[in-house]
Image (cartoon, rainbow, N blue to C red; front, side, top):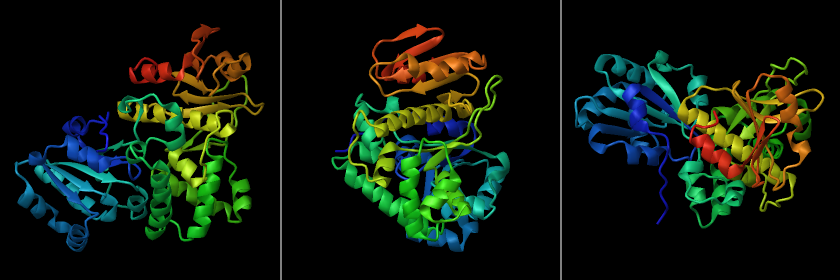
Amino acid sequence: MAKTHQRILNLRELLEKKSFFLFGPRATGKSTLIRRQLQADSTVIIDLLGLRTYREFLAHPEGLEDFVLAHAKIEKPTVVIDEIQKIPELLNEVHRLIEARGWRFLLTGSSARSLKAKGVNFLAGRAWTAELFPLCHPEIGDLDLDKRLRFGTLPAVYNSNYPDEDLDAYVSTYLKEEILSEGLARNLVAFSDFLKVAGLSQSKVMNMNKLARDLGISQPTVRSYYQILQDTFIGTMLPPLDLSKKRKAITHAKFFMFDMGVVHAMTETRSLDRNSTLYGDAFESYLISEVKAYVSYRRTKDQLYFWRTTSGDEVDLVVGKKAAFEFKATTKIQTSDVDGLRRLGEEQIIPFLAVVSQDKFETVNHGIRRMHWQTFLADLWADKLI
């Protein structure tokens, strides 16, 4: 029997305030979360992945009100429309029914691109946006860091007896075939090649021109492929912080994928050597993804950045103007590991500085806190860091 996880995102609390778009990559558990948290008696669920339902609403989106009235058991139900991007025309009716009947809607989707492409009604502020991520630290019962770094934390994969098989299927059936079938990328071969290169270069400062040359495609095509990954919530850009007073910052962003298991399936990585660069990159990426989930779930609205100067000083993550973190997979922190934090501290723009590692010796030196990764995640989700 598959293990269940208590998810942090509380749909009922969200819907008490407003209607919501709930976005997130496929397989993060949106449908499961809806079934577990929203009571059947007060909810009408419309699943647009069902062929009959899809055809019905595609032909008659104006039939939404009658459908809900026919299936609702209370006067003001919560209406869930799963995969709203399949029929974005429904949003006009959603907009009207929020105004006319005061119904609350939860509109889920794994692609904002289809909605943007058709210039549809985003409900003019009548619905807020939330995002569901793979399992985060408080939702996982074990402390198996190597498992998280190697296979990621998608619920179905993390619980699987065959995680490699499930990850390969995810990449082949969703990231390639489904994105192609949705018309998001026209050339599957070129896009498949791009996915591998994007996976290998994730967490590095981006160079669009070099990527285009390496792939033999145009720079605008590379840019459009990255936009596809952002619109489908598969990855995100991390911009550089440009507030330095004493040192000139670079202007190129980094790109991070949403899950390390998916990255390793894309790049055909079958093992992680603890002493390899890949392991260090996975450690950094995983912890950044945890902070991204935290900021989203807590709705703090803090922007995430990295800091790097033209002379090579670097800090992995800066959260607003509140905190900066350097992530090192090492079990023994060296003085050089905090050089970037020390130089950022000299700028006097970020009050809290920390290096996070697998070193169990925790202390504070010259205003820089040294934290074990478990302490970092425990303090993060206990609202003690940001």
